[in-house]
Image (cartoon, rainbow, N blue to C red):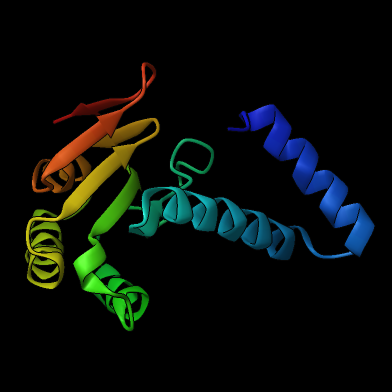
Length: 145
């Protein structure tokens, strides 16, 4: 598995080679690694993360009522019997929106949901991860209220 330095190098090389915008290149590389994880685990994979550490003054970077629509679009057409790996990196958000999202995910995947926290899932992110059947944390990862 690549580290952050390797991924940044890959992004730069890909962007130069294909003369693409940074956002387009990032999306291609992100999709590549999500597909690799999904292939490795045999499970559906959704990444829910925000840039709250690098863009702390931006609105809409926390869990809110609009997120359920995005999850509905992502889940549409998935084989729900495969379960869901939910990659979470979030400062938290609205409790009612998180509860609604958790209820929706459990209706779609029953209890076959695994949270993967690569770094931080705070507040409502912790609540969402605790609603999953299991949580995968790295040595650098943490959840907190």
